[in-house]
Image (cartoon, rainbow, N blue to C red; front, side, top):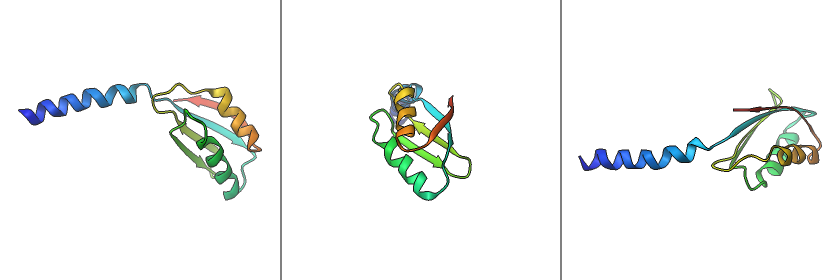
Length: 93
């Protein structure tokens, strides 16, 4: 009984944290090599609201997770531009 109560309590704590998570998928123009991927990962990883960055060279896309913070799409686009690439389209998931 105690185990079940503890499990329900933990799920109640964990679910609200993920409910506010925002994932953005951004199509990128100009990415051609592993150095491009590394540059984007480092630049986007420095933004305070981003908790995870996944860059796909094959698909020419970047996926960022913001944890429990609201994504500043303009700041993310500017970081991509500052890295030397062009954000083409942003998909909010």
